[in-house]
Amino acid sequence: MYVPRTDIPIKKIVTNPLPDEFKEPFTLTDSRGKKVTFTLSRVGHLKTAQRYIENKFAQEEQKFGYIKQLMSEETISTVLKEIPSSEIREYNTYLEKRSKDFAKIQQCQVINKVGSKKCSTLEDKLKVYNEIGLHTWKMYSDFVKTLNFGVDPKVEVISPFTGETVERRFQFRFLDFIPAVESPDDSGYTVSYEDE
Image 1 (cartoon, rainbow, N blue to C red):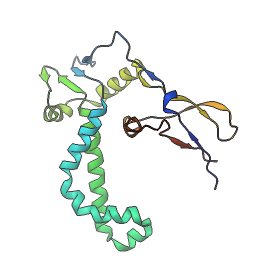
Image 2 (tube, rainbow, N blue to C red):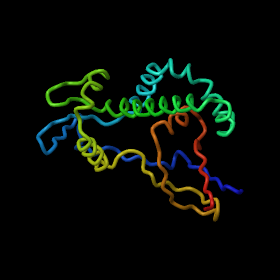
Image 3 (cartoon, rainbow, N blue to C red):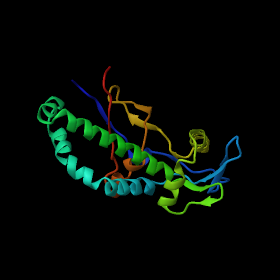
């Protein structure tokens, strides 16, 4: 099957700065009057979360290393034949816990203060994480969206079908740019368009 490809020139990616009037930290107050003070997420938060999870789950990584290795080299049917189903269930339970903890660690790093409790360490933030309700996290997400900052998802690329310049939307993540920033090459992306 033919899968057309195109490059995204890094120089054509536009970033939108934070509004001048925005200041950190900022406080959100829910309908009951509970105040939570936040900062914005940073690239470093992702790296901190990765390190934390690697340390926390080091023993499990060793325990399940052979399954991970086998899954990267073999088909699912081969893995299912070679590994008892009880071990696969245990591995899946571990992966689910690891993923939830990773999301929690990454998210809690934006907490600055809950009520009058200042949170300066990761441990402080983890202690108060469960005191923040889903509604407050949604308020945080909605507020951050209103700031309209960061990488503009619209990028001009050359269409592999027509050869003309077209505008497409791409979802960029923090770590997408780290290897590209260290590379002298301008085009760190290849995008595929598959026919449906």
